[in-house]
Amino acid sequence: MTRRQRREEAQVAQALVLPPTSSRRPLAVGSTMALSALVALTGYAHPLLVALAVGLAGLVMAWGWPVLLGLPSRFGTTVVLVIGTVACTAASALAADEPFLRWVPPALAVSLIAAFLHQLLRRDGRPRLTESVAASGAGLAIIASGVAYIPLPQTRGGSQTLAVAMAALAFSALADLGVPTARLRAWALPLAMVVGGVAGLAVALQAGRPSPATGALIGVLVAGTSHAVRRILAVLPSMVSSRSQLVSGATSVLLCGVVVYTLGRLLVA
Image (cartoon, rainbow, N blue to C red; front, side, top):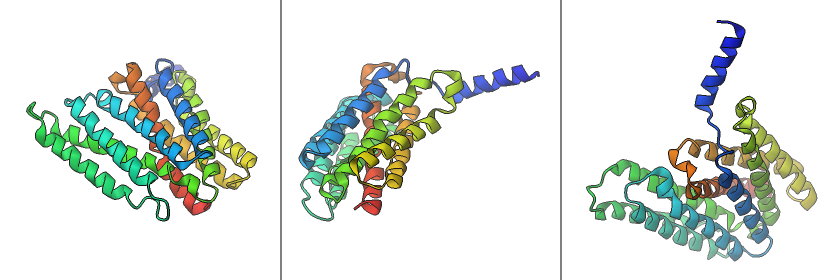
């Protein structure tokens, strides 16, 4: 094979491994940016408003998660995820002192019990039972991760940390726009992480907290996590629908909650 033939073969293999995610999925990028802006703004207002923003993202996910994954019992799975959203959001929002997340594990446990009860009450022969249980559990885990945003404004430097993370999430989502281009496809994740790190650094310098190094670290990690989530979901056939794209955006924001909370408590508070 000539050098040109080897290069073309490598590009074809790369296209199979890293499919395009953005030109036909603009709502995934737009919803990520919109939800990030909403969480950042509410972080400077009141923790209860953060809870409302996170709850909205959880309800969007409950509305479209079964459609995104093509689950057989969609209504029941939606009900389970709504229960999980309400329970985990309330458990995080109602904790007024340390430890702020102490009631989230019991709320998540109740939600998982509801998920198993849903499978027991199914009357469709329970096709794809393991897949349905795994999808419900994964959805509840993502929602539980997102509620970690809620107590951050009550911690030292928490509002600024939240703003740093949300800026990184919003601006790094723009890296998805280069994914359909074959030359940029392999560099989409590193590009998203670089953009997220720069955005986090800039907001940290402007806000005065956290430190520039911490802001850049938070930006790099949340940008990489959110991009990876959208990239994984992008291969699903259902991503052509608007509902699934909205869920992809909400999921990519919610899943970063634990990352932001952990780094905020360890390096900032």
